[in-house]
Image (cartoon, rainbow, N blue to C red):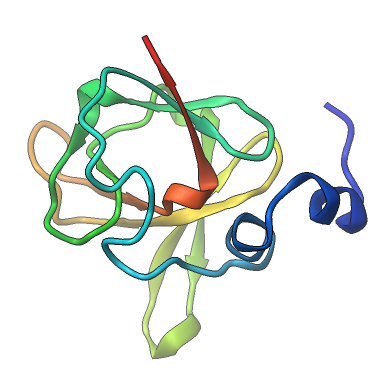
Length: 128
């Protein structure tokens, strides 16, 4: 996949998705289109359309964001140290296009114990 310029990202994404995926923003809790989605399917990156998560690993964390306890394959994401907001967190980024997706926390359910807290605007859901 060729790299897009900032202007190409601006032209291909709405303002909210651009702010979240390209600038590291976040959507308010309980406002994203997928936080309460219960349909069966695959959650793809909103930027490059690569598969990231499945509905089989999605769960209600009570956080107000789509939460998953695992990714489709570890190679699909990159974890970066995020020291913003006066705390250290693990930023979740799409390995293919470097889109900011959300954060990973160590408070998820078994079997991984991880919670991938992901912005709806960084996802594109495809129902099975």
